[in-house]
Length: 490
Image (cartoon, rainbow, N blue to C red; front, side):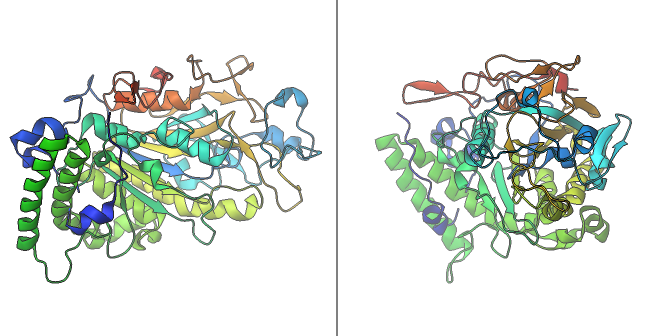
């Protein structure tokens, strides 16, 4: 049985450390730690991407106001959503009791951009400017209709907490490409001028039942990017090294006695933290960035903890070959006051997201860096609550929503999948409604499990071939579902 004790970063970082390669642990431990090259030893097939930057927009952006242009909603503004469009689909408890489901057209104008003719709202001018770099998926679908299970499904492949996150699975399978930084790094940002909205839990980037060495390491804004990393007063590097050497001998003896794999995780975390004492200040110091870089990302990039600063940090980590970089931006949960609140979100994210993709491309990093942008589900085409001349809101909608990818072996300039004129259902080329099925691949749709399988495929991993035995069963990220969407691949 695999132990899965909670990973207490305070306990081991107090001694000074987080994720060195197995070579530093000595030959007796290199066969157990599996840190440098992961449990696979090598990818299942030639990867298109070496690293992932996942820009998760927590709360679910309103697709109809950003990407999926629906002029019919304006034409039928305030008219009822036809029953045949909804066709008995479930609603959340927040709007199911409404006596009326009035359609609401977007407040903002849309235009087509690029050679692919992608539609973008006026709220996203910077993303519109790089539309030909994007692989846009308008036909995402999920099984979850509420935030916590939907985010958990998106990040871990299961709606109930306890499974490893996508980044943890990648780290477990492929290991690290930089022995001085963790293979999986996480940053969070809050929206400017608005409450954060839906809470984020560390289990979203946790290792679940995998050894805790594979969980994401959170970088924070401020002087101490990683808590408890610095030496306490009176302890210098030489003393810290002697302490770790003695602690290693004790842990080696304990591992020989108990064979607890968490001891290996603890050893590698101690050692990584020791190395991070030098690598982290270098990675997090923006003083070497010229003014034109801040102009590219936006002036918010000069303020630690903002989404723009985290995007710039993501590029710096990509340059240092960090395997999986996860950014969370909160505040997209807009059940009301979309005209007031959505522009705040796009001001936070539009320029910085486009700036990151441009920056990666001009540095030659985009070809082997997979960038992902999106939330946990979509938003309804009808108004939740009162629809007035000045404002409207949208409820949760799992049936269809938009995400996009860029680089990393995806097909640039692709617009994949489409929705009906009401923005309520995925449709095929003939306009007939189709539904994503987690059990079987349905062309034109992308279920969450299909997205996860495709991301792993781009990293060189067969999603069916990366498993972990826990409590008598072999688990994988996509559970017993998922298909690689080959139409998305370059």
